[in-house]
Length: 229
Image 1: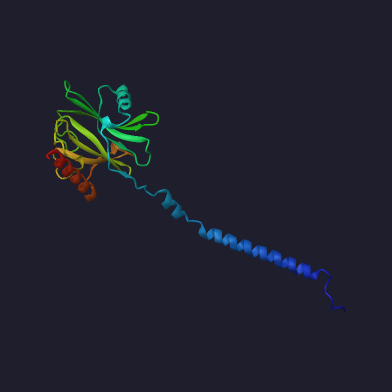
Image 2: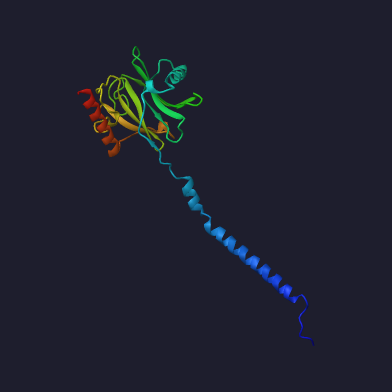
């Protein structure tokens, strides 16, 4: 019997080894792919993560470029509305701003407060919240026991607006800063938040951070220094 192997035996062995090698490499690559995929809980955590977004600055309505447009637009919805300070930009969607309005009918003793989201790109708007108040109410609104309450939008914090309620005849002085009002003494003023995802669920009391308070106190000092020099 001859000990010689078939003529193409070495080529057959080489081919088998190549096929085995391809199978092994493919298996390793699949294993690596599976290893780097996030599990279901990681995906869930990512989709439910809260976006941190804040804006603690506001502008006066008269300084706002779209003030005249906004007045005309909201008065088409309800006449005699006035835009109160301030106007606050959405930090996530910069083309949107928020502001509050007031409409007071003295002869009837009624006040209509409204909260708006306004689109500067196309002048569209949504009234997010409204409330009719009669001055015979025992406690006005949310800690403000004076007649004809006013609502001011002063900031945005993680999906909530920061608002200040005060009496319509409140006159705290030329250097007063809203960030220093309505949280130490809530008898006649009240600083609150309203959740934009559910505006009619009510207000929550709000106290600004130490950093915001210090910044506001510095602004008051600068104002008083300039005023009384």
